[in-house]
Length: 476
Image (cartoon, rainbow, N blue to C red; front, side, top):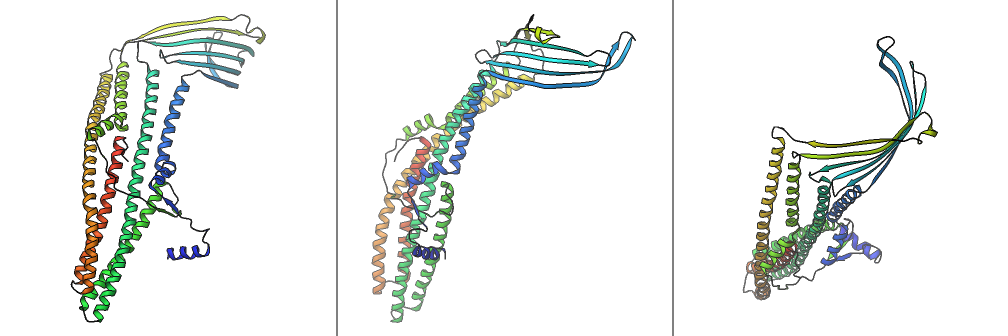
């Protein structure tokens, strides 16, 4: 019904309605790499990793923050000792303050330290039930250094982690591209095979119609039994039913193909292909070596091993002897008048060298180190197993290609033989030397030969595409 409706609209509006877009394999791949859900998802993951690294690198530069209390007000009952009464009494105390704070922080990634410059300025008014209202001003400006000594550099390690995660994200994006290209090829060739099966089925229907008409004429002339004519009528109905099922399957796969490419289901598209058999030469050892050298999953596994080693080192450092230097120099003053606040600034100096010696933690950190080492051994084990898996994958695809080659050679010849045999059988059926059953068997062999030949050719091309995906080599 839909096809009839579209045909009527095309007759009425031949240049305005249902402009069908024809897709080759190359065009389908290009569209998928631009519009598909999978590639967009991988792109967003890559952007997230890039921005995370940019954010971390930005955190290594100076950070300036400014805060204001405009104002800060407090009022409460406070317990204080009254020397006149020799006892604790509650007094109402309060203050209102306007304050500004300026802080500048500079991480030192090369030494895992940090420099801070902090400035503070406020004006304050204090009042209470036992004191007269007072007003004063305070300022403080200082520079401080916090420098761990002889311990694990966590800032440098975190930067390395962020950079490695970005490298992994780039490889994952490339891997997603390769997988998408392969998936598009699989979907395209499967759709092409269905389209060819529809053509073969349509041809089969025509052949059955011709055979049925011949059988009807021969039955009316009394040359064959009624059962033979009825058998050909059954074959015709069966072939029409097969054609309907293939058309439905083609439409369903076409919609799935649109989704894979990122197209709207309402878009009218078709596919064309110049699928041919192009023999290629493959060096299995070269394919394996190139896969091990370039496979993103194996390279990412190498990164995971390094990150695990870094984690072991970091966890182990938690219970080592640690030395930390904290030094501060500043100037400050407190005056009742703002005009004299900066006249006589006093030094504010503090230096401390802190030594931390782990004594006893019931083996907690030792267990964490053991857990980190176990994770490291697991990553190394995964790496060795992945290398074996990759070698096996390449061997399997290599054998699959060789098998498909042999099938293509054999089946292409069988199609020619089956076509000749069917034409001869059809003429023999017309002349009455064979039965309708014999003709149906030859037609079945012809259909199977054509379908098998297309399937072998597609298997061959998909096996090559799979090898390209898994080795990062180009063969076509």
